[in-house]
Image (cartoon, rainbow, N blue to C red; front, side, top):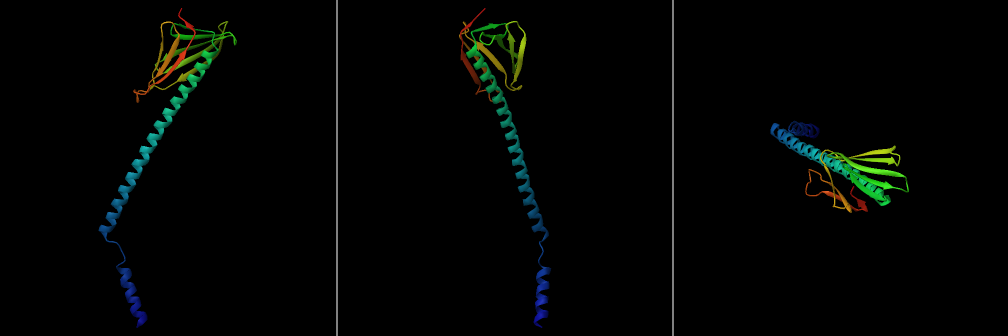
Length: 168
């Protein structure tokens, strides 16, 4: 009798060991809302990371431009501004280097020999969201390049340099 009674109790426990429909629906709704929240947070994190990477790429391009421009300016014997170009003469290296804003958001660096043979041409592209502006004082003693990210207009990047320039 003892074994029969134990089997009967065990069958009743297993017969009642299921979730009700309401319990199952509540668990499914909670699981769905948690998964939806996780997916939206993951998407937000991905967008944020993509924006961060894009900003870093632009900053690296500006940094590269600034390093090249400053090193050329230090080597230059004279600096001139003519027809929208900043030209630098480097007699030690026997070449002219000129920088010109190609469109609103890119700058061309052109290296030529004194015979005006092109040696090298670089494009610095800062993206459509980052317009470039160039300014100088009356005697070309100092120049500045301003890069303004349109998404963050209150924080422009300004590169200022002192020169021994002359106006034509």
